[in-house]
Every structure is written in structure tokens, then in C-alpha cells.
Length: 165
Image 1: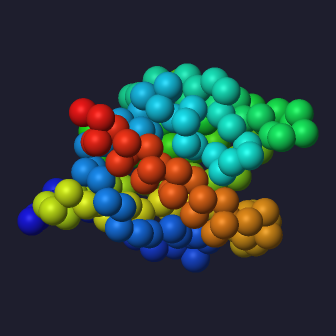
Image 2: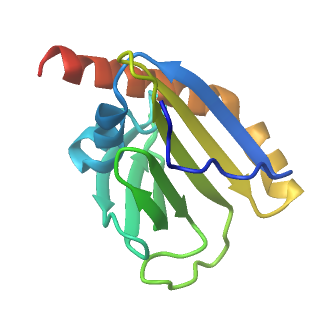
């Protein structure tokens, strides 16, 4: 099966999570782009997303309010750079929407969904950092474990959506 979406060029400051998820690409894309679904999986439990606002277009703002188990609150703001429905979502925290610069960029996320044609999807999440220090900080924050748990939650939600369709 050919895929017209060209994969990103690997970069020295990338952290990558890649796995095959037992759900179709279009369902995974919905989980990323429908706010009520994003709130169900986007950060590893016991953290949760309590609000999501997504303007799905290049230059459109994204916002996630994340709450921790001890009352912590993180406001995650960013902007979409590229949207290819069902296949690719690129966003960055370098801007907060409509090309307004943020105070401190940390990373760009490159999310791809490659439908394998058998009900599974090759899911790839790249966190591309501006420098080695930010990459190291993200690793120390628990990138592998945190993004891995979120991907598990994404897969569970997507499978439930398929089962209940």
C-alpha cells in the first residue's frame, strides 16, 4: 500500500515513539482531533486533560489543560503547522496560534498514522527539540514512559470506538 505522506527527516534532537496499534488510522486521527476524545487519553494517568481546544489548520491554535493528581495544572499551548487528515499532524509550541511566538519553544511534534490495511496502524510520534538540552530534559521527564502510557490509552480508546461503532 503506497502512502503519499513523506516521513520526516530524522534529526539529532528527536525522541521517537513508534508502534503498531490495533485500530484503523482514521480512528486514531479522530482521537487526536476531537476534543472530547483527546480528554480521554492524551496524558498518562493519573494526569488528565480537562479541557482541549483544537483549531485544526496550519496556524490554528491548540490548547490542553492538564491536571495532576495533587492539584497541579499545566496549560499547554501551541499551534498546528501541518494537517493531513487521517495521516499526519504537525504542531509546535514555538507559536500559540496565528503565528504569535511563544515565550520559550520546547519542541515540535510530528504525529503520523500509516494504515497497514489490516485494521492496524503504524503510529509514530516524534518530539523534535530545539537543542540537546531540551531533548535531555524531556528524556529525564520520562518521555518513553509517559508517551508510551499515553499511546496505550490511545489504543484502548480507539479499540473501544471501533467496538462500539
